[in-house]
Length: 427
Image (cartoon, rainbow, N blue to C red; front, side, top):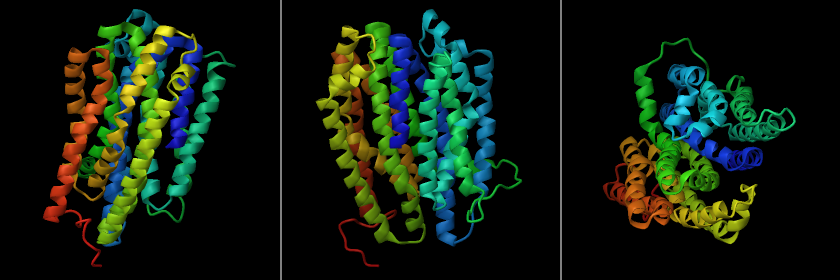
């Protein structure tokens, strides 16, 4: 996920260098569309792989029908996105808040993104099943390889070939195919427990997968919801320049969130397998390690955001716009205070899903990723203006952390899902 984060960083830099503030505005308006596509893909892919791990861990058998079912449903659900990209990409961009000038400049960019939807969704499934089938190294190489491809061809398509913004979208659309090719070296090898089957798409398997994949869905969609809400609030408060400033902050936030998602997604297969086999001591140890790591990462990220504010935002301010710098510097500091809570929240929500606690995962994911951010964003913007918008992320995560820890405490007391972490392992 650090490799993926490097792609976010470089892609935003190239777009800022190529198209300035307008380019960042376009990127920020399209990011929620990316988020929705990735969210659907992650919900099906990670949820299916979690079912695969739990079933395999509990019975020792193979549950690879989830793999084919996930791919088939992702093809079905990608069709509307592809059709929108072919026929009305400009209307989609306008719906996201783009004015006529932004729509004219960004129409080709969003068209390529929408047409590449199946590749984005497949990437989530191939990645999750590779990790859950005991091949984390292959998954890591694929993620790093596709990110390196994306960075290299971002530059080649945008500058030497003179394609501009559409070149960035094309590199982004091809990169998941590169990743899937690398995942396939394991998935279709003799040592894999995953096989393609000739099956009809099963709504039952899909529903079971989505129940456990909802935390992954909300983990991805939360960024899209946050960006969409903030975009509209900022368009009203500060116009395109405010959205451009948030575009800088949002892309840095995506890097931070990606790292926490990497931690949580790396923990998930280990927790699911141990829980499925009844090894409660391992489950407790994995959770403890996950939380400790999340806290350390939170400290590092907030320190970097406060210690290198001007340097980070200045990278994406190619025109040296002082007003943009003023917005972005203050926004970065206020927004990143939310990562004092967000890392642990992401780890805990994924943990609930990994042990099959679908209801807890769903409630906490929807609360922090959709409901609270909308309410806090709207209410706090009316009270404190721009500062309220930037701080609403921190308020959301703080409230969500209280709910998450309450649910976790109830689980321990009732001893329904996990052992009491204060007791010694009796195994």
